[in-house]
Every structure is written in C-alpha cells, then in structure tokens.
Length: 259
Image (cartoon, rainbow, N blue to C red; front, side, top):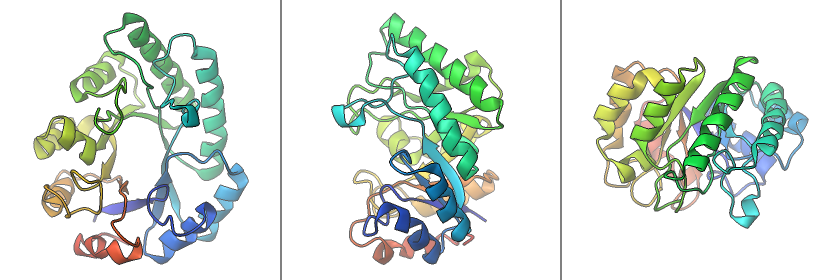
C-alpha cells in the first residue's frame, strides 16, 4: 500500500506550524515533511512528532537567505564554508526528528558556468559524505524554471548523470511529479527507469499545484504505477489546497492509501 506524507509547509496552513503536526495526524497521515524547520527548536518538533506518532519523511537543508531570494547555496561559488555549517545545522534537526532523508537545494546559478557546476559537485559530495556517516540519504530535486526561475538544477538528465558520475551510495533523486511533468513529461516511463535511484517522490496536480487528480495528469494511474514498481517510500503531498486542507482530502481516500 502507498504511504503519504503531508507537506505541512503547504498543507494545514490554517493552523500554526507546530499545531499542523496534530492536524495532519488527525486527518490520517502517518508522516509529515516540510520545507524548513529552523524557526523552531529541534526539541519542539521532535516532541510533536512523538506526541502524534508521526514519521519525519523529509525536510530541506538551510537554503541561505530565503527572504532575500536565495534558493540554496550549493552551486554558489565561495559559499562552501557556509554550506558546511548548514550541513551541521541540518544534522542536529535530523537526529532530533529521526529524518533519514534531507534535500539539498542548489541555488540560483547558471548551470553552464563551470565555477558554479564545480561548486555544486563539491557541495553535493561533501554533504552526501557527511550525512552518510549518520545513515541519512542526500536528495537532489530538479525544479522547473517556471516555478523557480534561474534555479541551477532544472533538468532531470543532468541530475541523473551527476548521481551516476559521483557514485555515492547515499545520494538519491527526489522525483517531484509536478516538476517532472512541467520540465519533461513522460512521468510513468521516467519513474520506471529512474526508480533504482529515487529516494523520495512528491505529488501535486499540474499546472496549478493543487490536490492530485485536479489537473492534466491521471494521478490515480500514477499511484497504481508506483505500487506496481514496488515503491515503498513516502509520497510527499507538496501541494497548495484549493480551499480548506481537510475539504480537499477526498483524493487521499480514493487513492487507497495506507493511513
């Protein structure tokens, strides 16, 4: 059976952040993910997870100055020491919450810039090796240029080739169905081909990033396809509810999720 994780940075926003854990559990979710936990002490988040018997599926490592428009620093030349410090910060939260997968954001940079590409490879290698010492996988997620203009990692073939080139055991692909459809389409075939390197899957409708089965894709087919591929990880629900979060959860029950 499929397992779904509520992305509480986008869902359950009717509640204050720390109260979203309970709201997600009450709605039937067994896991949560979110963009960033760093505005709250790791102990506070760990307590909510424990209280509501939730698994921490995923979160992002520190992205740099988000308010100033930074979307990660891995591909930004001259930021390696800051990157190293951010890995240690993320590890504190991962160890407190039991997270086994972290996503490293690349940043706004030109992938044709050789210095940016070299910085990214160095940062990815360092982060993956550091996390591996704690039994944690590092995930790389291609993000479409419409949602995040100028993002360095905006191409699946590049991500695939880099993961293969680096050959790091705990370096995996984060397959976001929303981003994949906008960038390249061919979602079902790509899932089948890339499954050996996929560490996490996320879902949202295309093109509006709302609940599954409200856009151009047959999300029910994709869910059945993931079951047939024996995908055993969580599917992160990284979407913006069209109305109230609870009112839009009919798709979840239709998916036959294990809740």
